[in-house]
Image 1 (cartoon, rainbow, N blue to C red):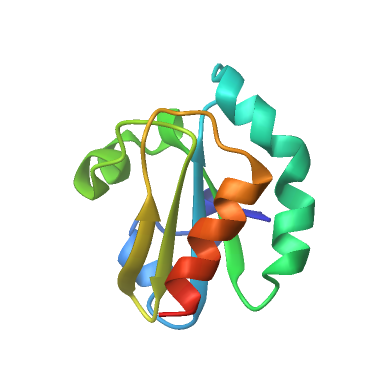
Image 2: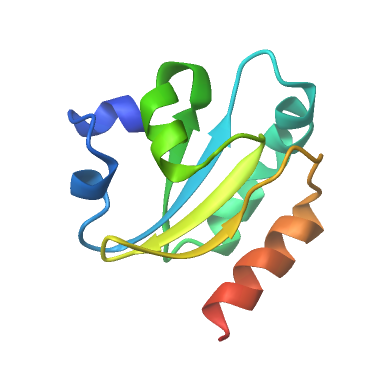
Amino acid sequence: MKNFEDFGTNDIKEATKQGKFILFWHADWCPDCKFIEPKMPELEKEYSDFEWISMNRDNNMEIARDMGIMGIPSFVIIENGEEIGRLVNKDRKTKEEVENFVDSVINK
């Protein structure tokens, strides 16, 4: 998973303008984020047709505000610059919940 900072831009629209992406919003202090983190490599492998981007909310507060990311951990799917799905709330998420979310978006 790439860190957003690795893209060399602070413009999320620029970074995600071509291709399929899943943004994983989290923070270092968030226990529910730590809960899902061990499952992230499995999710990345399962949905390898997406580029996964690690979005530390504390490092990207302006983008988080612009995108309405108030609860973490959260996931946002973007295809060719357009948001096509979001699982954004403050609740703990299981691997199965994330899989169900991604499947519901890509199987529309």
